[in-house]
Image (cartoon, rainbow, N blue to C red; front, side, top):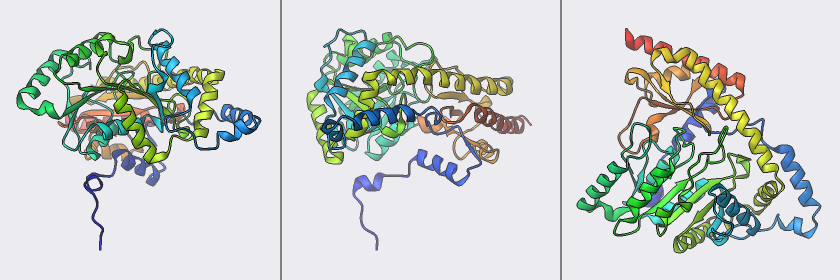
Length: 422
């Protein structure tokens, strides 16, 4: 006899990333260009050990880091992170309010809390096309519908198309269910695209003219993971057209420092929304692990965080170049295409002649057979499935493994391209 699950429980489906990781476990011979894991060899074990040793020598205050902390997060850490955003956005010190900052279990938790407290089943969220596919899974699990915004040929939001979409939604009454607009604004997962400040300003201007407020969720998880220089656009928190628009800015310390510590953060301009998220968060976990927060707080304040991050940027740039050059030498003449990113962990590929690359495709099976796998790009689209895109992650494999993975991928690509041409 089976129990009856709630509507929420019944909506849940196995996540695509879990399925992809199951392949890695079942086939240890397969090289993964799928999951966005960070570089294992560069994880700051020695730095964390030194920080823990320092904490152990602090007496009662050191022991307190192993006690429960506050639900909103450690005050000093929130202050450091608030100042960090101000510096990135060239804002005067004190422009942002530390009390609007809270610490989360990675940025993923803050995204979930945002939708959980903002939306009812049947509501909808505007997203880019493509977008972060795990966010789409969050929406599906909570019964919220993603609506793809029109995009231009550069990968930017088509603002005129957005205006037309909002007009259409207003005329049909669908706008009453529209709760937020979600942007992955820096070195986006999966495309590597960054949103220009002018596009952000236009989006803010469009939203500010609506009859009721539509929230903005800005996902800046990769903002600091650039290769040579940061993207010049300020965040929505600093752009004048977003004043008065409820805005949640989320980011993380997992990708630029240590994924295992699972510390993220969010800044919310709407107090009632923030308090609702914190209330739900408290019900879930009583606050993000105090000890993990203490470690990253000391890493940030001592400068070891930024020293590590600077080294990491060089590591990821070399890995990206390795994968790009290996694929380019083998696949460019066959019609495969992609843009060279300026940050983050991914190459976003387009197959030639609309060759299908989704998880059920012959190409996906050929890659597994050749000992390599990837994230099918169709997972990154909200409704209409685009089946000729692929996300490759160069984060976790060593350089030599990346070269081998590229060789395996190219062999599969060549076999399928030749089969299509015959």
